[in-house]
Image (cartoon, rainbow, N blue to C red; front, side, top):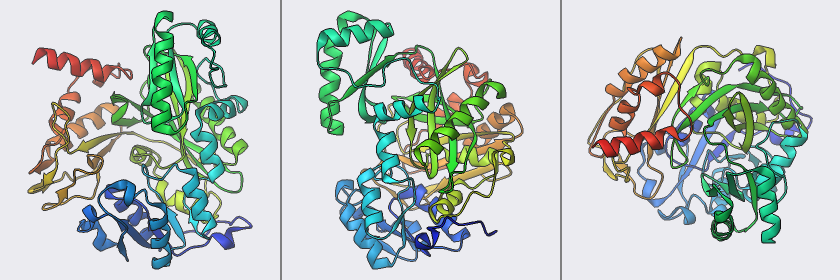
Length: 464
């Protein structure tokens, strides 16, 4: 690994052992990055994951609580104790669980450890959707029409805001995420009921009833821009992804680059994201999420963590994003400038889930047979093997199938072959659903938006 300059405070950020505060395929992915950097990886687990095969690749594998995630993977005190017992100098939160919890990031740093991610203040700023929008507007990042303030309590004032924006509008929880805490309001007569329902949902789910309002875009695509930053004020963006294929606001298939977007349209948006990172003092990896409609970008939120779909950007950029994230946490300066970033070819990622391909109900059980595709341009990120018991306690994601090829058409063909060559028995998976999706003509032509998959599924159910 070539030596890179260090931040003046980097001596206090050096570490040799990383505690992985997560599970499944992302734990495997982080362990590999640590190994390639010459670092020791230790990890936590719950009672349900004690026999997980990836535990054998860790220098230590400590059980921190029962199967219930609230008492294990979300138990901050237990995780910090595990770090102390294993001699870890840093904590990598992966994604999900505590990865975007500002209080946890702060607790890690106060314990004398390094949090592999942005500062607690950056997480807090970008986690509050109103504060995030205000920061992005100040940096020149294009945002969805609507005020950068919370909605007032007065019904008449709320109605005036909606009229100024123009119907349809969308109501969102300030602290929301993951597709929760939002409602579309097509006309004025439905506004007050939507406000009341969303406030209560926000209070229960996120601990705050604060809401904001934006214009609802009817046929947008979901476009992401990946950024990488260090403590020296350096930042780059690593191309863009299309994550429009969503079911119930959850991504199913991702690709890079987003098809049909000219470089001269995306380039100023990417540079605005870089400038925003510099203004808020962002460190590590992050993702700016946008809605894209009629040639215009509209910022919706920033994810202050590693994304599930980071492999498609790794495949097109040729960069190891997880290694770069760890090196940034160590205080190293970026060893590349924007001019060094060259994205080539096309990549797709399919999320392989343990679920019924028709009803999407989770499928727990023992994997009795497993055969994974191999060959040029094919990558599988997974933690499973034959004999592995899929738990009912956590997210149904069991593998990520990623392909890369010189063109989008060739990448689609390669994914079709890879899906056909993936055999998982003993449980139900969504592979038949994914194979059907990759045979869809509109998807093949790139003529989809964030609502397309739901409509496609509805037509399939009707036809059946």
